Length: 220
Image (cartoon, rainbow, N blue to C red; front, side):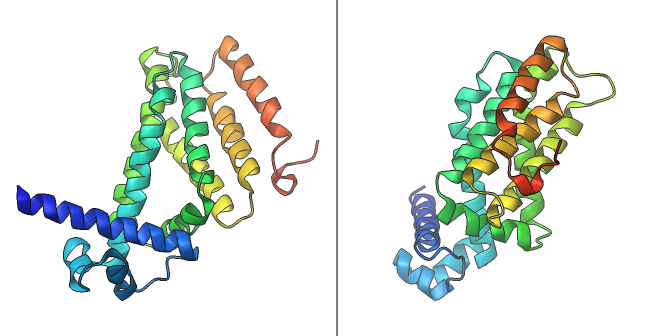
C-alpha cells in the first residue's frame, strides 16, 4: 500500500510538472530531462511510470476529461432532457476556454498525432460523456426509432471535436468556439426534438447565430 501510494504521488508530480511546463511555454516541446528536473525526479522515473512522453500527454488529456466530468455534474443533474445536453456542451466548451494556453497545445497534440492505443481509449471516454448527457432523452423515449442513442452521441463527439480543432488552430476565438458548440449541439438535437423542445432549440440557435464566425456562416 505504501509503495503504491508513493508511486501514485510520483505520477501526479510528473503530470503536474508537465502541465506547468505547457502552461509556461505554450507548447508540448519539452524534453523528458526537463520534465524530470521540474518534477524533482530521476530521468528514468517518468519512463518507468508512463513508458513514454506520449503516454504522459494522454494522461493529461484523460485528467482533463475527469475535470470536465466533475464540472458537468450540475449539467447532468438537469431535469429537462434537452437542456441537459445543452448545458453539458456549454460546460465542456467553458472548461477549454478557461485555460487556452494549456488546452490549445495539449489538444493540438491529440488532434495532430496518430496513436492506435491511447487515442481510441480517449475518444471512447469522450463518447461516454455525450452518452451520459443524452441519458434523459433516451430514458424518456424521445429518440425516434431511426436514431439510436449511440449514433446521436457519436455525432455530438464529431461536431464538438471539429469545433475544438478550429479553436485549437485559433480559427475560432473563445466566444466563437462556445457559440459554435451551442449552435451545433442545438442543430443536431433538432433532429430528435418534439414541438415544445424544437421551440427551445430554435431560440438557442437564434441567440448563438449572431456570435458565429463570419467565415464559417453561410450568408442569408
